[in-house]
Length: 390
Image: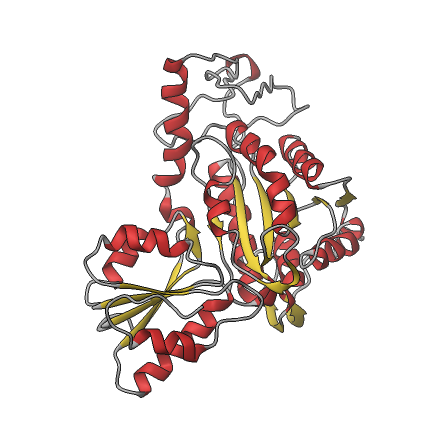
């Protein structure tokens, strides 16, 4: 590639959500992808395998998903923006090394194009059944960040946001797509290089002799030296002090663990995103994300046409859930409807937040097909918090 040619594929394109996700990663500066083929995420790997080598990047097909995350973490520690992509069974295999990434504070992006499960389940059909795993899948306490796009355009945009958030907060970030968004082909507009802000991790501001790998100020996010850059880079999966030394006592844990969680929770302005439609006077508030957010949009429009004041709350960032924004939107609601292609995972969080103030109606599906707007519309008119049919 000539140095004058931009690696960014600008302009208007008709592409899959999976392909848009890959282009978002490239726009954000991703130059390393390690992965293992799995339906319905394989098109992301295929796109990266095609696009990365000509722009000076590297694609590696690993032996499995465990090795994929390990390679991604290693590439990021060396200073390269890195990503992997998978689906349900592969996401399960990634959980231990995902926890390693949280503990070592390594920025990277993991994409999960969800399908129906559990186990092999429905390899080619839609599901949103990994949402709770995205929050609590690895062992121990931590705070994960998970985006959920509803279109190929959002797949492009939120992948950029995921890289920015990972770099800004020094943490792995998840993009929780679903099979329909991944395989949906729509127009995607890619701006010229430089039109979108791209954030980078903070490099050391002190000489190597003064550098402490996990020293923080009120920001709670440590500066990050690059392996091979002349600084002492000490990382461990064990509980550690600011020098990166393993110190496995309760006092050190009591300092480290809350910081790892709070550096995310106290910087919601970095990542929190949501869409509101007709929520100001809504007596019924519909909560939906991913492809179900599009069905919910149709349901709200149908409800309004029938004289029912329905509104939509669509989190683009599902974890941490935009709790304050949701509670503001639900202030006028007499009923909340949660629609998702699982048996009620995010609904648990909504029920916790609403705390019994109004009924919460679940519209659920075991996976395999998109929830129709009419089914969500029916729940909008149902009283007494009855369960969905599915």
